[in-house]
Figure 1 (tube, one colour):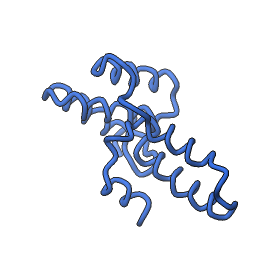
Figure 2 (cartoon, helix red, strand yellow):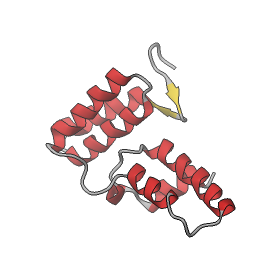
Figure 3 (cartoon, helix red, strand yellow):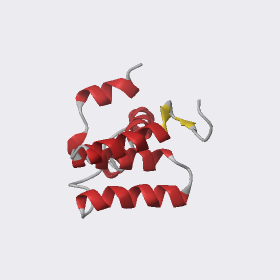
Figure 4 (tube, one colour):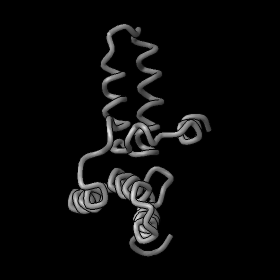
Length: 121
């Protein structure tokens, strides 16, 4: 690991920042925006998180398209029609998914392969 890199959740945050910058230069704005948001979700530094979110917003000009993964997970876990054991199981899996993909990831951009990766080792 290079100096200054911090390993978080099995992902290298600086690698995501570099990927986002490269995607932006290549004109792949939506992908760059998602990478900036993922990098922001991996950092514990509030100033860096704000900076990365601003970079993402510069690309889109507005908030995320539709609900985010984190918003959807929160709403799902607030349901009252699940028993406690089922809810606990869903919560563990969905929180792991949010850590892996980033809570600010737009829900429409989440693919089946992304879901299967962190949730099904």
